[in-house]
Every structure is written in structure tokens, then in C-alpha cells.
Length: 186
Image (cartoon, rainbow, N blue to C red):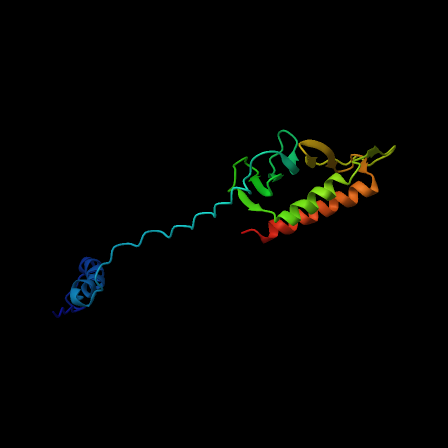
């Protein structure tokens, strides 16, 4: 199919109609035979199911250690809660600044690691002292550390509260152990 346009014979109104038609001619002349056959759309890939923990590692029962990143009421900041259960299972629950829950992360500590964590936490006196003088800066974020379901220390900016040296070293060791475990998880 050949289409001829003569610029001499086209008026300005014909030119306005001719240009869009020129753009459509290649589409109208294209052969359907060269087009690839239509394929049904592939379904979206399905994420593999999370591995089911063995019966000895379920996030149930007493919580051995908990780290709660909290905020003061009204502060629009992210929060998190990490819990280590007596079974060795651990969970991490996060919320964004709008209070929407993110996907829970889970895992299991090896029995030897759980035993080491338990010995670390129970080897501390958890003695908190208050400084006579402290800075007055404030932050709406703070962390609450709990052992066996009981708060043992609340860490706030310029609160003036400090742990005894032995307890601080034990807490730091426990935090490092949990952070390393969380880093291994997907």
C-alpha cells in the first residue's frame, strides 16, 4: 500500500489531518504475522514459606531477654521489640514512624548460645545508681531491657541512671550476642 501526499495540493487544514495520518500508516501496514504470539501473563513469584521451627524452638513460653526500643507518647518515631524465649526462639517486631507494623523477623539460637546468654544475664547484679548531677537534654526515644520478664534497666539520654560496671559489661555482651544473631537472619 502506497500513499502519496503532495505538499502543493494540501491546504493548511489538510496538513493538520495529514500529519496524524502519516503517523498511523506504519502501524496500519504492519504485518500481524511478524508479531510475537500473545502469552498469558506469568503469575507473580511466590515467596518461599518461612521454615517451620522445630518443636523445641517456638516463640512461646517465658521470655528470657527483651530489648524494647520505645518512644514517649505522641512521638512519631519507629519502635522495635526483640524477645528471646526460653526455647531459644527469638522474634523482632518493628513498627514504622506511623505506627504500622512491619514484617516480623524470627529465628532460633543454638542451645549453646542460649545457655551462654542465660549465664551472661543471670551473672549480673543489675544495680542501678542515680547521678547527683546530669545533663538536661531530652529524647523521646529510650530502651527498656528486661530479664525474665522484669525490667532491669531503662536507658534514656541524660537520665542520670547508670548500671554497675559488671552489669553494664554483661548487658553489653548480651546485646552484642543478639545483634550478631539478628545480623545472620534474612
